[in-house]
Picture 1: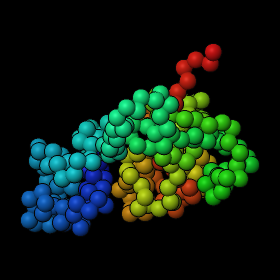
Picture 2 (picture 1 turned 120 degrees about the vertical axis):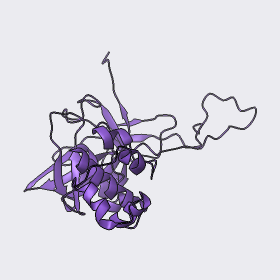
Picture 3 (picture 1 turned 30 degrees about the horizontal axis):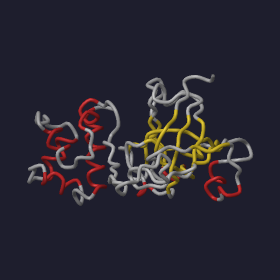
Length: 244
């Protein structure tokens, strides 16, 4: 993706955040009183000011300037924060039932997808699906389940056999945080598959979305959002380096 394309994605993201009502309004925030002047910059018809990326990313802290300028890393910065909760005085128990962030210690179920257990059926009624094991991690945000990674699409960040822990989300474009990693169930061109991808905005239309791999040998894929039938936000991952 070229610089101008990344800037258009950033503009689209800023509008979706509510920073501006539309592209014209965003241009005014950047000092462009003439609608066509801002449009000409975005379309490459006039030279872009040297500080344009800095000013654009300065409109919202969630935008990752390195991605906009160089195409490296995620579109958005991580925005998850936690409020630290101090335990009562004199409570020195080792097996404290709450984490230091005030969250209950969870037993997150691990599932294995196969021909009989699809991601859609799991999300619809996970109580009917028997997990193969459970995970407990201190300070883990609320999660719904975990699965084993297959393939190398997210290598070297994730490799086959790693575990990703996820939170189910409604299958809605409004629920997407662009730049984050998602576990997706996709139906496309008569095929159905489960995949791990970053979700980025697309320049091809409001209902289009870009599936992006960490592994650079795989090209990004532009699809209509309606092709995604189930989705979950990846909250954490686990890698086991030794089997003995």
